Length: 250
Ligand SMILES: N[C@@H](CCC(=O)N[C@@H](CS)C(=O)NCC(=O)O)C(=O)O
Image 1 (cartoon, helix red, strand yellow):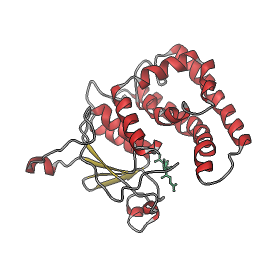
Image 2 (cartoon, rainbow, N blue to C red):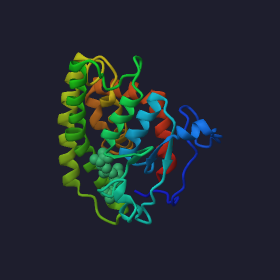
Image 3 (cartoon, protein in one colour):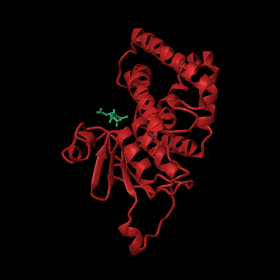
Image 4 (cartoon, protein in one colour):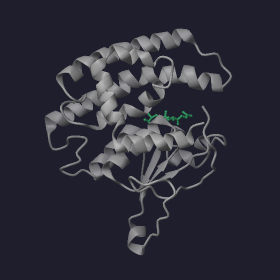
Protein backbone atom coordinates (compact mmCIF):
# COMPACT_ATOMS: atom_id res chain seq x y z
CA UNK A 1 0.00 0.00 0.00
CA UNK A 2 1.39 3.32 -0.96
CA UNK A 3 0.27 6.73 -0.05
CA UNK A 4 0.90 9.82 -2.07
CA UNK A 5 3.51 12.02 -0.52
CA UNK A 6 2.23 15.51 -0.61
CA UNK A 7 4.49 16.72 2.19
CA UNK A 8 2.58 18.91 4.56
CA UNK A 9 0.08 20.08 2.00
CA UNK A 10 -3.09 21.40 3.55
CA UNK A 11 -6.08 20.95 1.30
CA UNK A 12 -8.84 23.44 0.94
CA UNK A 13 -11.48 23.09 3.60
CA UNK A 14 -14.06 20.48 2.76
CA UNK A 15 -17.63 21.62 2.63
CA UNK A 16 -19.90 18.62 2.80
CA UNK A 17 -21.22 17.69 -0.61
CA UNK A 18 -18.57 19.67 -2.45
CA UNK A 19 -15.36 18.60 -4.15
CA UNK A 20 -11.80 19.01 -2.99
CA UNK A 21 -11.01 22.12 -4.90
CA UNK A 22 -13.36 24.51 -3.19
CA UNK A 23 -11.79 27.90 -2.71
CA UNK A 24 -13.10 29.12 0.57
CA UNK A 25 -12.64 32.79 1.40
CA UNK A 26 -12.62 33.12 5.15
CA UNK A 27 -13.96 36.20 6.87
CA UNK A 28 -12.60 37.25 10.27
CA UNK A 29 -15.57 35.65 11.99
CA UNK A 30 -15.03 32.43 10.07
CA UNK A 31 -11.33 32.42 10.90
CA UNK A 32 -12.19 32.35 14.59
CA UNK A 33 -14.31 29.28 13.79
CA UNK A 34 -11.60 27.62 11.69
CA UNK A 35 -12.48 24.18 10.37
CA UNK A 36 -11.22 21.23 12.34
CA UNK A 37 -8.12 19.48 11.05
CA UNK A 38 -7.86 15.77 10.36
CA UNK A 39 -4.23 14.69 10.12
CA UNK A 40 -3.69 11.74 7.83
CA UNK A 41 -4.66 10.63 4.35
CA UNK A 42 -8.24 9.61 3.62
CA UNK A 43 -6.91 6.33 2.21
CA UNK A 44 -6.26 5.10 5.74
CA UNK A 45 -9.32 3.34 7.09
CA UNK A 46 -9.03 4.92 10.53
CA UNK A 47 -8.90 8.37 8.95
CA UNK A 48 -11.88 7.56 6.72
CA UNK A 49 -13.90 6.64 9.82
CA UNK A 50 -13.48 10.18 11.16
CA UNK A 51 -14.18 11.77 7.77
CA UNK A 52 -17.49 9.98 7.31
CA UNK A 53 -18.67 11.32 10.67
CA UNK A 54 -17.70 14.86 9.68
CA UNK A 55 -19.58 14.41 6.41
CA UNK A 56 -22.67 13.00 8.12
CA UNK A 57 -22.96 15.98 10.47
CA UNK A 58 -22.12 18.50 7.75
CA UNK A 59 -19.03 19.92 9.51
CA UNK A 60 -16.26 21.69 7.65
CA UNK A 61 -12.82 20.16 7.91
CA UNK A 62 -9.34 20.20 6.46
CA UNK A 63 -7.33 17.10 5.69
CA UNK A 64 -3.69 17.72 6.56
CA UNK A 65 -1.48 15.14 4.98
CA UNK A 66 1.10 13.27 7.03
CA UNK A 67 3.91 12.14 4.75
CA UNK A 68 4.36 8.40 5.34
CA UNK A 69 7.11 8.16 2.70
CA UNK A 70 9.14 10.62 4.73
CA UNK A 71 8.03 8.80 7.94
CA UNK A 72 6.60 12.04 9.23
CA UNK A 73 4.30 10.05 11.53
CA UNK A 74 7.42 8.88 13.39
CA UNK A 75 9.05 12.32 13.34
CA UNK A 76 9.60 14.73 16.23
CA UNK A 77 6.41 16.77 15.70
CA UNK A 78 3.94 13.91 15.54
CA UNK A 79 3.96 12.48 19.13
CA UNK A 80 2.26 15.62 20.41
CA UNK A 81 -0.56 14.84 17.98
CA UNK A 82 -0.59 11.04 18.20
CA UNK A 83 1.86 9.52 20.71
CA UNK A 84 1.71 6.14 18.94
CA UNK A 85 3.12 7.61 15.74
CA UNK A 86 -0.07 6.83 13.83
CA UNK A 87 -2.90 8.54 12.02
CA UNK A 88 -5.43 9.93 12.45
CA UNK A 89 -4.80 12.85 14.73
CA UNK A 90 -7.36 15.59 15.05
CA UNK A 91 -7.26 19.24 16.02
CA UNK A 92 -10.15 21.47 16.97
CA UNK A 93 -8.67 24.75 18.19
CA UNK A 94 -6.58 23.90 21.23
CA UNK A 95 -7.99 20.38 21.50
CA UNK A 96 -5.89 17.58 20.04
CA UNK A 97 -7.22 14.02 19.87
CA UNK A 98 -6.14 10.66 18.54
CA UNK A 99 -7.91 7.25 18.23
CA UNK A 100 -10.40 7.29 15.38
CA UNK A 101 -13.42 6.05 17.35
CA UNK A 102 -12.86 8.58 20.13
CA UNK A 103 -12.49 11.35 17.55
CA UNK A 104 -15.66 10.17 15.83
CA UNK A 105 -17.56 10.26 19.12
CA UNK A 106 -16.32 13.80 19.76
CA UNK A 107 -17.46 14.95 16.32
CA UNK A 108 -20.88 13.34 16.72
CA UNK A 109 -21.35 14.77 20.22
CA UNK A 110 -20.28 18.24 19.20
CA UNK A 111 -22.65 18.34 16.23
CA UNK A 112 -25.49 16.35 17.75
CA UNK A 113 -28.96 17.59 16.90
CA UNK A 114 -32.39 16.06 17.37
CA UNK A 115 -32.21 14.87 13.76
CA UNK A 116 -28.58 13.71 13.74
CA UNK A 117 -27.82 11.82 16.94
CA UNK A 118 -25.58 8.99 15.81
CA UNK A 119 -24.54 8.02 19.35
CA UNK A 120 -28.14 8.00 20.63
CA UNK A 121 -27.09 10.19 23.50
CA UNK A 122 -29.92 11.13 25.81
CA UNK A 123 -31.23 7.56 25.67
CA UNK A 124 -29.19 5.41 28.09
CA UNK A 125 -30.37 2.10 26.63
CA UNK A 126 -29.80 2.94 22.99
CA UNK A 127 -26.46 4.62 23.67
CA UNK A 128 -25.36 1.52 25.64
CA UNK A 129 -26.21 -0.60 22.60
CA UNK A 130 -24.14 1.72 20.43
CA UNK A 131 -21.23 1.16 22.85
CA UNK A 132 -21.68 -2.62 22.77
CA UNK A 133 -21.72 -2.90 19.00
CA UNK A 134 -18.93 -0.40 18.53
CA UNK A 135 -16.82 -2.64 20.76
CA UNK A 136 -17.78 -5.58 18.56
CA UNK A 137 -16.66 -3.65 15.49
CA UNK A 138 -13.36 -2.65 17.13
CA UNK A 139 -12.55 -5.94 18.87
CA UNK A 140 -14.05 -8.63 16.61
CA UNK A 141 -14.65 -7.28 13.12
CA UNK A 142 -11.68 -4.92 12.76
CA UNK A 143 -8.87 -7.37 13.74
CA UNK A 144 -10.07 -9.98 11.22
CA UNK A 145 -10.42 -7.39 8.45
CA UNK A 146 -7.12 -5.72 9.26
CA UNK A 147 -5.26 -9.01 9.19
CA UNK A 148 -6.60 -9.95 5.72
CA UNK A 149 -5.85 -6.45 4.44
CA UNK A 150 -2.30 -6.58 5.79
CA UNK A 151 -1.53 -9.95 4.25
CA UNK A 152 -3.20 -9.26 0.93
CA UNK A 153 -2.27 -5.62 0.30
CA UNK A 154 0.50 -4.47 2.64
CA UNK A 155 2.76 -7.54 2.76
CA UNK A 156 3.27 -7.72 -1.05
CA UNK A 157 3.93 -3.96 -1.15
CA UNK A 158 6.70 -4.56 1.40
CA UNK A 159 8.13 -7.37 -0.72
CA UNK A 160 6.79 -10.11 1.56
CA UNK A 161 4.78 -13.18 0.61
CA UNK A 162 1.22 -13.10 1.98
CA UNK A 163 0.65 -15.76 4.64
CA UNK A 164 -2.31 -17.76 3.33
CA UNK A 165 -2.74 -19.54 6.66
CA UNK A 166 -3.25 -16.23 8.46
CA UNK A 167 -5.65 -15.10 5.72
CA UNK A 168 -7.67 -18.34 6.03
CA UNK A 169 -7.87 -18.05 9.81
CA UNK A 170 -8.88 -14.40 9.63
CA UNK A 171 -11.59 -15.06 7.04
CA UNK A 172 -12.89 -17.78 9.36
CA UNK A 173 -12.99 -15.31 12.26
CA UNK A 174 -14.78 -12.83 10.00
CA UNK A 175 -17.35 -15.49 9.08
CA UNK A 176 -18.17 -15.96 12.77
CA UNK A 177 -18.67 -12.21 13.21
CA UNK A 178 -20.89 -12.08 10.12
CA UNK A 179 -23.05 -14.89 11.52
CA UNK A 180 -23.68 -12.76 14.59
CA UNK A 181 -24.39 -9.72 12.39
CA UNK A 182 -26.83 -11.70 10.24
CA UNK A 183 -28.80 -12.73 13.33
CA UNK A 184 -28.81 -9.18 14.68
CA UNK A 185 -29.87 -7.71 11.33
CA UNK A 186 -32.72 -10.20 11.17
CA UNK A 187 -34.09 -8.56 14.30
CA UNK A 188 -33.11 -4.96 13.59
CA UNK A 189 -32.53 -2.72 10.60
CA UNK A 190 -29.09 -1.60 11.83
CA UNK A 191 -26.51 -3.20 14.07
CA UNK A 192 -27.24 -1.39 17.33
CA UNK A 193 -31.02 -1.34 16.78
CA UNK A 194 -33.58 0.22 14.46
CA UNK A 195 -31.52 3.39 14.12
CA UNK A 196 -28.43 4.28 12.14
CA UNK A 197 -25.44 4.95 14.38
CA UNK A 198 -21.68 5.33 14.47
CA UNK A 199 -21.57 1.53 14.65
CA UNK A 200 -22.79 1.16 11.08
CA UNK A 201 -20.64 3.97 9.69
CA UNK A 202 -17.57 2.62 11.43
CA UNK A 203 -17.71 -0.58 9.38
CA UNK A 204 -17.55 1.03 5.97
CA UNK A 205 -13.83 1.84 5.44
CA UNK A 206 -12.43 -1.67 5.89
CA UNK A 207 -15.42 -3.29 4.18
CA UNK A 208 -14.87 -0.99 1.22
CA UNK A 209 -11.34 -2.33 0.70
CA UNK A 210 -12.34 -5.91 1.52
CA UNK A 211 -14.96 -5.92 -1.24
CA UNK A 212 -12.15 -5.39 -3.75
CA UNK A 213 -10.29 -8.50 -2.56
CA UNK A 214 -10.72 -12.11 -3.69
CA UNK A 215 -12.30 -13.05 -0.32
CA UNK A 216 -15.31 -10.74 -0.74
CA UNK A 217 -17.58 -13.70 -1.53
CA UNK A 218 -17.56 -14.58 2.16
CA UNK A 219 -20.30 -11.96 2.52
CA UNK A 220 -22.56 -13.76 0.03
CA UNK A 221 -23.83 -16.21 2.65
CA UNK A 222 -25.30 -13.34 4.68
CA UNK A 223 -28.16 -11.63 2.80
CA UNK A 224 -29.16 -9.30 5.65
CA UNK A 225 -25.58 -8.16 6.01
CA UNK A 226 -25.39 -7.53 2.28
CA UNK A 227 -28.60 -5.48 2.31
CA UNK A 228 -27.34 -3.49 5.30
CA UNK A 229 -24.06 -2.77 3.48
CA UNK A 230 -25.88 -1.79 0.30
CA UNK A 231 -27.84 0.84 2.23
CA UNK A 232 -24.68 2.02 4.00
CA UNK A 233 -22.71 2.39 0.77
CA UNK A 234 -25.56 4.35 -0.76
CA UNK A 235 -25.24 7.16 1.79
CA UNK A 236 -23.92 10.42 0.29
CA UNK A 237 -21.41 10.80 3.15
CA UNK A 238 -19.99 7.34 2.50
CA UNK A 239 -19.81 7.97 -1.26
CA UNK A 240 -17.99 11.25 -0.65
CA UNK A 241 -15.37 9.65 1.61
CA UNK A 242 -14.87 6.75 -0.82
CA UNK A 243 -14.05 9.34 -3.49
CA UNK A 244 -11.46 10.89 -1.16
CA UNK A 245 -10.01 7.46 -0.37
CA UNK A 246 -9.65 6.70 -4.08
CA UNK A 247 -7.77 9.96 -4.68
CA UNK A 248 -5.25 9.08 -1.98
CA UNK A 249 -4.79 5.37 -2.65
CA UNK A 250 -2.39 4.09 -5.26
N1 LIG B 1 -6.65 2.44 17.07
C1 LIG B 1 -6.13 3.47 16.21
C2 LIG B 1 -5.35 2.79 15.09
C3 LIG B 1 -4.61 3.79 14.23
C4 LIG B 1 -3.84 3.09 13.12
O1 LIG B 1 -3.58 1.87 13.15
N2 LIG B 1 -3.45 3.89 12.11
C5 LIG B 1 -2.70 3.36 11.01
C6 LIG B 1 -3.31 3.84 9.71
S1 LIG B 1 -4.95 3.22 9.44
C7 LIG B 1 -1.28 3.92 11.08
O2 LIG B 1 -1.07 5.07 11.37
N3 LIG B 1 -0.30 3.05 10.80
C8 LIG B 1 1.08 3.44 10.77
C9 LIG B 1 1.86 2.89 11.90
O3 LIG B 1 1.32 2.20 12.77
O4 LIG B 1 3.07 3.14 11.88
C10 LIG B 1 -7.27 4.35 15.66
O5 LIG B 1 -8.42 3.88 15.63
O6 LIG B 1 -7.04 5.52 15.32
